[in-house]
Image (cartoon, rainbow, N blue to C red; front, side, top):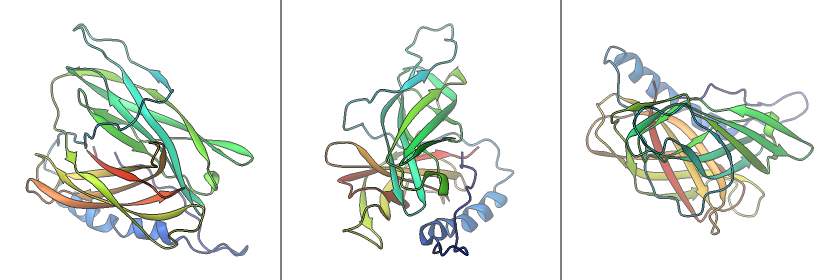
Length: 259
């Protein structure tokens, strides 16, 4: 689901300069919103997301699960990686989740972040998502002034329920990262993560795209979030604006349907 818009600082009497990155993300919204209005009567659309294999060992996290269903299964959602990307007055805390169940969909999965920055901690919650059996999905949320100069984040996860059955899952190629301006030589900057998405979802499906970028050691150093409309076909190229705290060695794009 699409994160609720967060207030982004603009130029003020104290001299803060306008935030160029946030305006870039907003330019994607009108197309998605018009397409959403045109497809409002299309009915329920299956959830979808990319399913890359994590390239590093799971990181500790607090994970709570709902009461198990009657069928035996590993009904647990784990955090395989977490981190934060920050630039200017904005930050994206990121958690990469994996549904360990082999036959059940995890629904109402909520990720709560506690973002650390010099002098304090700020808590925020991402929009709920659903994960198909065995699915991997990056979840993030935009934090503005309150997370300025963010350095790290801790993550907790709760699962609302478990359902039998299948749901559509999208896949993505490994993403390429292109830095924006400023690029190298600064602490924190912005760029784009681009990949090709594939999946069997109806034309007009509104998707939430997320991105997670890692350094050479596998630690998450950046992330991004935007929405787009699936125009049909078997695959499509997509690009997600990201904030990174250090130059990433690799990025991955994920997709899920907005309910």
